[in-house]
Image 1 (cartoon, one colour):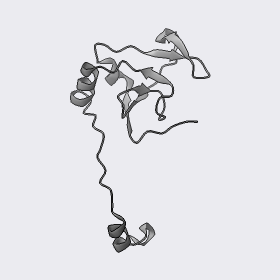
Image 2 (image 1 turned 45 degrees about the vertical axis):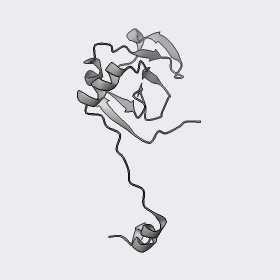
Image 3 (image 1 turned 90 degrees about the vertical axis):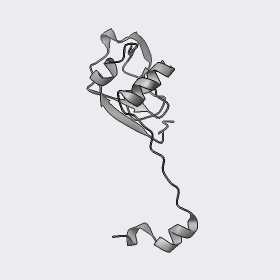
Amino acid sequence: MRKMGKYCKAYPIERFREYGGWSEKAFTDNGKEAGDSSNSPERSFLYLQENYVVTSNIFLDEDIVFDDVTPEWIDHCTNALKFEVPVYESVSPQAQSAIGPAEDIQ
């Protein structure tokens, strides 16, 4: 079953290729790893997942293009790509009932 993460962000593939340790995994038509990226179709955007793995689609841990997550890679994502997983504040049930149903908000 496909699993969606809580957050991912799309970047042009060129931005990932700026990283010195970047390498791409290629996939066959059914999404299985096929070796190096020399025969992979060119994509214009890839997705940086919340766990710093790069995928070719929005699903977490599926069609992985890059998964060499090191402190250097995390630093590159944080500083060069300005990647930051947002922290969502939860709304308490009491606050939600005071606001009312979402469809009532205008």
